[in-house]
Each structure stands twice: as C-alpha cells, then as structure tokens.
Image (tube, rainbow over all chains, first blue to last red; front, side):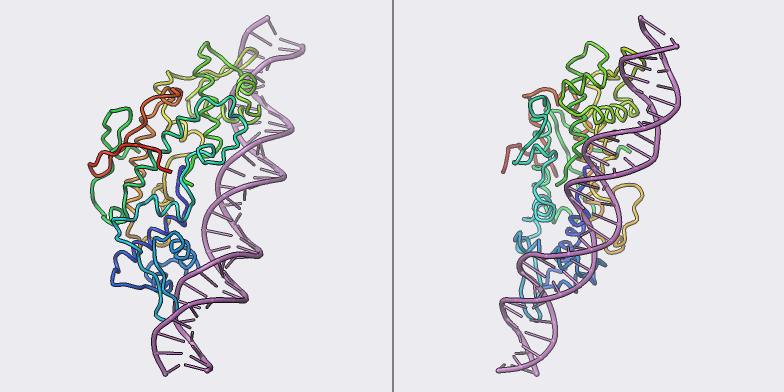
Length: 153
Length: 153
DNA sequence: CTAAATAGGACTAAACTAGTCCTCTTTAAA
DNA sequence: TTTAAAGAGGACTAGTTTAGTCCTATTTAG
C-alpha cells in the first residue's frame, strides 16, 4: 500500500486542468466535463482545495475556481495535506500519539525520520513538475549514498 | 495520510525484537510478551513475514522464528511488501490499471515517478537502520537540487 | 504418544473512504 | 428587484478495507 487516496489523485487531475487552462475561472461543471470526474466529486474536491487556499473561488454566475498561485508554488505535499490530511507514515508520527506499545517500541524515531524525508520530498515537487510528462526522475539519498533511480519491478 | 498500515508498523517492532534478540529462535508468544502486541496479531504477522522469507520458522516444541538474513539485508520496502502489499502511491501506478479517466489524465507519469523514488528510498533503508535510534536522517534530491531535511511542522 | 509450536485460512467488527445530496449564501445580469 | 448560476458547508450512506480473533491441521521434540 503506502498510497494516497483516490480523491487526492483526482485532485491533482483537477488542478492540472486549472493549471493548463490558465485563462482564468473554470466552474466545477467545466472541470468535471473536461476531466471525466463526476460533478459532485469535483465540487467536493474544489471546495477542499479552496479551503486550503490552493485555489480561489468566485461565487455567482460566471463564477468558478482558479489556482491561487503559480503552479510552481503548489507542492504535492500541499495537495495531499488539503485532501488527505497531514502526511504521517505511521499513526505515532502524527502528533496525537496514543500508542499502546510505546514502552516497548524500538523503532519509533526511524519511521519518523523516513516520514520527514518523504514529506520533504513531496514539498519539493510542484504542480508544475507533476504536469511535465517527462522530466528528471527524483533522486534520493540515504545516509550519504547517492541512489540512482530505476524502475525495479 | 500517505501512511503504512498499523500492521506494518507492528511488523517492524516484531522484527526489531528478533534482530535485537539475535540469539536465535523466539516463539510468537515470547515476541508478544516482549513487544506488548497481542499474541494472535504477532502470530499473524510472523506468518506473513515467514511467507515472504523475511523470517524463517521452526515447528514443534522449542520452535519459533528468527530473521532469515542479516538485519542489514532486510529493507523497509521488504517489510511493507510482505505486510501491506506492493508499494504504489496511486491505484493506477499498480499494474492492473483500470482507471476511468485515463483518457483525460495528465498527471499519471508524475505520481509514478514519485512512487519509484519513494520505493527506491525504502529499498535502501534496512532494518538495521531502523533500529539505530539515532543516525543520519535520510536526504532526498529532486530535479538535481539537494535538499536538507528538517522537521518542518 | 503427547504437547508445544507453526500453517493456513475463515470470519467479524470497526473504521475509513468515496461519493451523493440537500440547503444556504453570494452575485451578475435582466 | 428579481432570478438563476454558481460556490459553501455539511449530513448522510454504501462500500471497501483493515485489524484482530479464532479454529483446525500439521509438524516435531521429548
């Protein structure tokens, strides 16, 4: 597993549409038509994204949504935060840790370190990067060893 | 979200116990007592880990489990694969993609690139690394920019 | 032979997710 | 000033997933 929710995935598709069609306002209905995602779902997504200030909304006739800032200033982490809640790889890396086995746990900090690293990587990936069909594959390092990235399976 | 399941988290705790207590066989009951995780759950975890050849099992009285190989040769990705199924950040990055909106999707490859990168990072983190309470925080790079890792929120 | 241990899988309850729908508010235009 | 197009906010439901338990079979040391 270790996956983002389908809504977050759809969210990036919706944002991608707004970023491409950067002329201005697009209504939820327009986005739904363009992306093939059901209107109530698009509407829900855009409302969440507006609340997170990733898009701005305009009410009334001819209203709609548009990106609140440049696509390069919107990170994958922003989108995940808005739609899936904060990234935390384990329950105990979330703030309200009430872990039953904490007293016996010898691995807590390790997952948290991984979490910070993934988090940071997602912070650095912008919507603009997501839009580029081709481009550099992210590179990771661990413990000082550079790692070249290839598809493995 | 973007989190591993609680079972996988517990799995690392169980493996940590086996790695620390490297004298040899430990029964599921012993591990349960040492970790504070309920016996049926520990048992289930160890069965899955045995199937994935991360631990070896010995039946009969005085039987139990032990690591199948050195803790440095067991990666976080191995554990996640065994307990959570293969890592794939979105549904369509899994092999059996049957995405309804594929025709409209402009972001597919991007998540897959992120997925590969996270996957690769998890491949490089060993159980031995997880056990070190302190140690280097993983570093990531994206698009050639080195990123220093700090706790951000 | 017996008992300690794992193997395998069925099953249930709880939690979470996705998706829909309803009512209210805002606002442009007739 | 009225109307209708749009978003805001939230309640609700169905479906899926996950966690956890339990039962029966198999293996094997003593």
